[in-house]
Image (cartoon, rainbow, N blue to C red; front, top):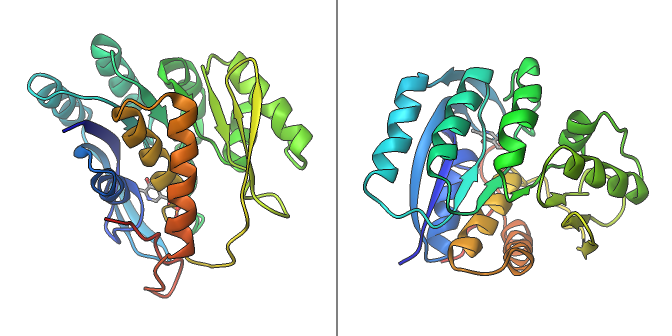
Length: 257
Ligand code: PLP
């Protein structure tokens, strides 16, 4: 059985973060492992509190896994401080042989900051060059590049800028722009648009986490990067179409076993 590792934050509500990642891995028939970087007290409505995990324990979790288990792909999600980013990047650098998917988590759908403002620079310098693909949404791409993104042309400009920052491949998710959601895949040379149809639902909690972990699961199963993204896009479309209307806020995506 193929394996995948998520290095991310816990969402007590079960819709995003580590919980969404592990459900996504299982749904893909991939054995999931986790390094928890933060615990959030969260539901579908709000993030009530965040406790970062001590960096020694983060490092030990990574070492415990790599000293024993095979890791076929890695997904990185919420790393909220410079210290945590430094720890994860140095631990992974020593061991890297498998594909890494970086979801540059910054703000929750409910508006809570999950990345300290001073950590964006560290994310760009330490994690972007380590990743095989980075999957920002429009506000995250704006934060990474300083470019105001209002059109698909702006998305192309931002993708090129993110590659200049050292990213090997970028999937820039266009769902925050008006109209149909078009995601831009850029491999440093060619662009490819994944054109989706908007699903009108408020239940979109954990979509970014689910998409990035589906890419990691497909990479673990030895798909090439383009195929991994294509299959993950199909998975997230289904997961949003059948998302769960539970809780009073943004309900979670649905996972298919
Ligand atoms: N909580 C955690 C721990 C996360 O990792 C993420 C990921 O983006 C979120 C919340 C945000 O989820 P969403 O913006 O989909 O509500």
